[in-house]
Amino acid sequence: MEQAQYSKLFSFLWNIANDVLVHAFEKGKYKDIIMPMLVLRRIDVLLEPTKDKVLERKEANDAALRKAFATLGFTLETKVK
Image (cartoon, rainbow, N blue to C red; front, side, top):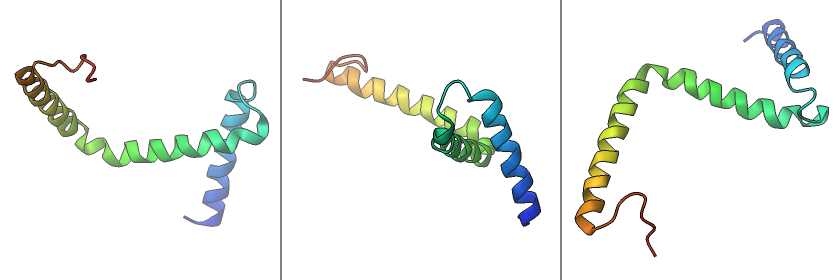
C-alpha cells in the first residue's frame, strides 16, 4: 500500500471514529477500540469464502458433542462438578 493510500484510509477511519465514538469513549482511547475492530473485520473478510463450510462443520461437531454427552448422562447445559 502506498503512503498516500494509507494516509487516506487512516484519515477516513479516524473521521468515522470521531463521528461515531466521540461520546462513547475518551478520544485518546479510540485506538484501543478501532484496532481490534479492524483486525476482526480483516479476519472476517479473509474467512468469508469458507464461512458456510465452517458453520456446517460446527453444527456437525455440536451434534456429535451432544450425542457424546447424552451417552454419559449429561447435556451441554449441565454443569460438570
